[in-house]
Every structure is written in structure tokens, then in C-alpha cells.
Length: 95
Image (tube, rainbow, N blue to C red; front, side):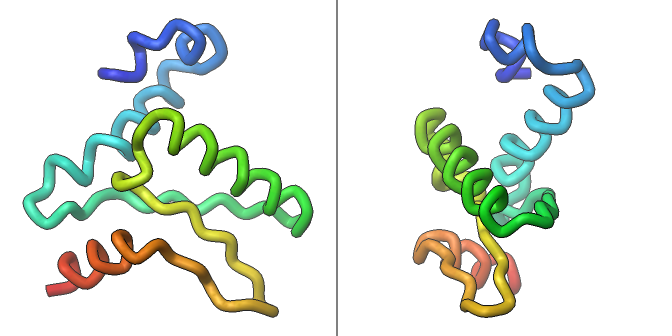
């Protein structure tokens, strides 16, 4: 498991959490169509949800995983914004 080699993650995470994160990150690479798991996190506060999205994107990008998964913020008052490379991946996986 690649994530267990990062000491700062090991020190602040349970083995179960590390296993879930490893599955989320590596599953798209195992499937020939790039399909993998989906994780939905509901944050009832719009302000906290925006902060969570920003932080998750920062960490994802620092780890170089921006092409492995997308982080979306759903708001009934606005449309979803999805990166072009991820839309392409979704279209390929639907066929």
C-alpha cells in the first residue's frame, strides 16, 4: 500500500482509513477503462463544504493525483464544475 510509506499519514490515520484511501487512489489504474470507486462526503454547511473542497484539492494536487479523481461541490443554486480531463474519462468509461 503506497500510502503507508508516508509517515505523517500513518501517524494520524487508522489502518482502515489508509486502506480506503489506497483503494480510491489505485482502483482507477487497475481497471482497463479507468473506472473506480466513488466516495460521497456530505457537509451540511456551505461554507465548510467550500473549505473542505479547497483543502481536498490542495492535497490531491500536491500528491500529483489530479488526474486520478475529481472533487465536486454540489450546490442546488449552481451547476457542477468538472475538469475537462475528468469529463473525457467519464465519457470513455460509459462506453
